[in-house]
Amino acid sequence: MPVCPQSAHRLVLATSSDDLKAKRDRAILLLGFAAAMRRSEIAALDVADLEFSKRGLLVTVRRSKTDQTGEGQEIGIPFVPNAGLCAATAVRTWLDVAGITEGAVFRSFRLNRTMTPRRMNPGDIATLIKTVTAPSIRAEFGSCGWARPESSAVLSEAYTMREDGRSPVES
Image (cartoon, rainbow, N blue to C red; front, top):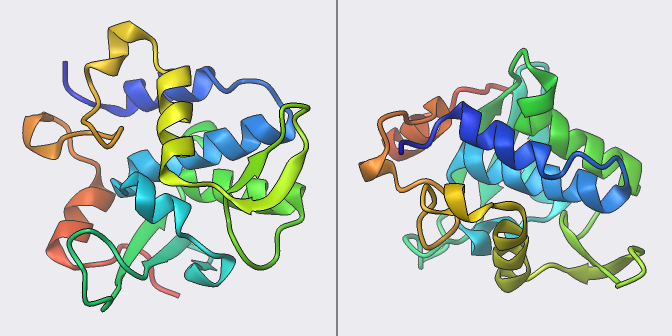
């Protein structure tokens, strides 16, 4: 089954609660899907790595598995008409309601659902993905939790532009 926007929509529906943790989870899932980011890249994001503009969100990935020298890469995430599936809107909403203005973008929660200042780790993001994906759709996602582009009939524009070294979002 190819990865497509409907798959992202099913993941977002799994985080339909309106509490703070659900907003964080929604932002992680949508950002990971839209930008085809690895768990480690998502976990490493700081507020300073995000730049919002009228066209969307520019994410700077400082270091990744394929960029061991730390040259970094910018990924443009455009605003999309369906706000419920818009990664840029979800990240902005998460930061606003959580009151996060610096440091780690995605933070852990205690069992009582209160946020900690501790950065999430890639394992936390893997657990989130496993929790919200039903076994019937889990097969759509690669070992990192996101689409395996080579097996997908539908590639997101963000992924295609990332691979080409282009950015769809200008400041």
